[in-house]
Image (cartoon, rainbow over all chains, first blue to last red; front, side, top):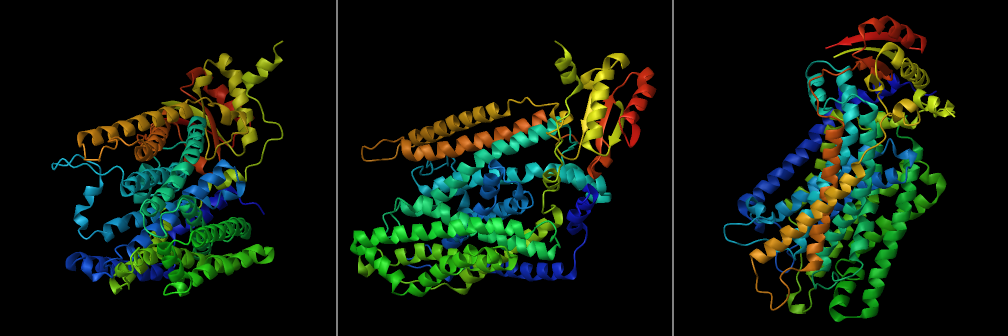
Length: 450
Length: 174
């Protein structure tokens, strides 16, 4: 039976008003892990960056892996949501807000890592282009500065993309709430009333934003890849790094989105709204990205192997059969051998549990991929006497675990403040089309005139 | 502001009411621009959802992009010329890397212009709450009414709004 607007409102606003003890327990566990991560960071700030495992020649490791990983995860949302909007995929409606929220949170977590990675984080403002009193402007030829512009543009765009379609839903909450909630949502809704002009402007703005945000998202991860590809480090200086990173980002992003949706579906009892078809469609996208990821990995390795440069081959062999080989083959299993068959079989892909089973290893595998791009290359640069090794310390591990908990925590809090599914867009999807669009009286009169 | 309006349960009856009001305007002494339509979702397939369909937003977004891009290019060039680093005879203002920042600021310009255009043309934020509104809209009702109607036409308007299928007809004054 089709739900009435009132029933939809009640179902989707329920998580804002009621939470079970499980919710609070999860909140406490995740909050504790985040607090542990902040403690570890504080410990590092107090004692210096030496408490991490970073040492010559491996100066980029866990933190930069986390940075690239979370920026990649951020591609789940805005990019996927924008592509589905532009292609007018109607099944997107219950998915988009969840996806857009992932982008904002993952991007915020990812953007924190350059600060965590700084030995003296209080000097972070040196990253910002400004004419300092020393007369030194930032180096515009550095990909690190391109990151600053790209990530901030994407963050501003993603926050806007998340907030714009939220105004009508905030207005809906305002109308039904009382007390402080009414005041807060009244302010957040910006006085939205729902005139035809407002609706038309909002939809036009969303269309423009969707078109604008796709190239921004692509540029962000391309620029992150250039942090590596612009450096003459064996294994990094590659022309396909841009598309390779973008494909990997979308791949890990979709996997994260599926996991987040499955958890929210269960926790917030949204079974009627997040249906198997949504997971199956995302599973199809995930399968395509898994194949694409394998294609890029193969192309990248084959070209290196054919070139046979000694410095490149040192990195190649250390990942294929050397010290990092266990991680490499785990990555291949996680990103391709486990998920591809699951997602290729329709009967499995159609089941939510199986899409989640395929997605979890992908998140692990993509984190490993980022690690394997960074650490083996830095520990095997050109001359064997510069070879080194890297072992993470408890500080880096705690901070990394804390960011995963942080993502979960932000998402849980988000679900208590925002309707996790865009209510008006969902209703719009169920709107009956008029058999023949009734014309305006003025149009009827005009049509009657000879 | 004063208004009289009806709340309609479905878009068909709302469309009927709008047609009635458009026809009645000249008889009862109000203009088309006095007709108010409010809904909790867009009804683009219906005439009442198409009352406002012209906007220069895409052009303004493009203009914002051009302004953003030019500002980005100027900013980067100005910065590089202001601190002439020793570059071994190579160009100080480097087109390829500067193009990346120009590109990002072009997109940022377009995004911010879209946002600002939306806020200005939709007349939000507006927290005063003086404009016509009814919270029943959020339960799926569609509001069709006339703002500042002539006093003598009130009874007739109420009759016609009810005849078009209004569940309730109310007056608004603030």
